[in-house]
Each structure stands twice: as C-alpha cells, then as structure tokens.
Amino acid sequence: VLTGLAVVIALKVGLFNIGAQGQLLFGALGAAWAGYTYDTWPALLLIPTCLIFGVAAGAMWAAIAGLLKAYRGVHEVISTIMLNSIAFGIIEYLLSGPIKEEGQTLLRTPAIADAAKLPTFGFVPVGVIVAVAAAILLHSMLNRTVLGFKFNTIGKNKHAAGYSGMRIPRLV
Image (spheres, rainbow, N blue to C red):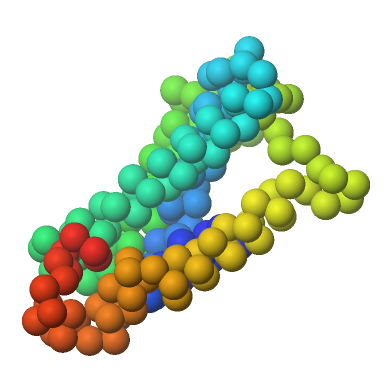
C-alpha cells in the first residue's frame, strides 16, 4: 500500500514511476539496517527510527530518477527500470557480503531486534493502520493543499504551470 502511494505522487505530477520495486527494496534495507544496528534501543525509539530510515532510503533511491528527469530530461520510465536492475544488484551484493547474517546461506540481513517489529492490535497489524493513515493524509495533501494543487497542475499541463511561475524541476 505504501509503495502504491509513492507511485500515486509521481502520477499526480504526470510521471510514471516504474521503479517502485527498487525503491521498496532500498526502503526495506534502510529499515532493516536500523532494526539490527540499534537493537538495544526501546521500541518507542526504534520503530520510528526504522520507519524514518526506510522512508529516507527509498526516497533517496527514487530521487535519482527525479533529478535525472527534472534536470537532464531523462525519461522516468527508462531510468526507473534501469534503477530497478541496479537496485537488485546492489542489494544482492550487500546481502551476500557486507551485511550478510553470519552463518546463513540465504541472502538476508541479520535479524532485527524484537523491539523493531510492529505490534498488532488483535489480529490487525499496526502496519495496516499506518498504511490507511498515510493514504488519508496523502489524499488530503493532494486534494486540499497548495502543494497538491501544484502537483495536479503540473500533471495536467506542464506549460501552463511554468507560465504561472511554478518551479517545475523542483516540484518534479
């Protein structure tokens, strides 16, 4: 759901983000790294830290395609597909060497701390609640804020947005 929301943002600006899979992998790697690196932290600090690292890692990987599109005119479909392949290679390298769990034959990170795992409310994982809240917040941002209006304007008519003074490369 969260990866789908990331794709929606790009679609609003008129871009086709085909690289969500690579961005998800980098986000997962960032969250996992925080989850096993800061394994002595309490859950109250560790869970938000993992979420922040995950979002930051995925966003940094997505920003490569965004910067290439905005400042070099590289088509986002081509760059994101290529970045997916690069992401798979980097993740495979990291999981088979530098951050591989010792004694494992599988490609995986060391186990994250129990404190890094999201709890459940009954049978509903907290991740579902986070995803629904993020969807509601994104809907509100896209439909009720100036930033959402700018995204929509650029997505519908990039030339009109430019004539109105919007900084298109920055928003892309």
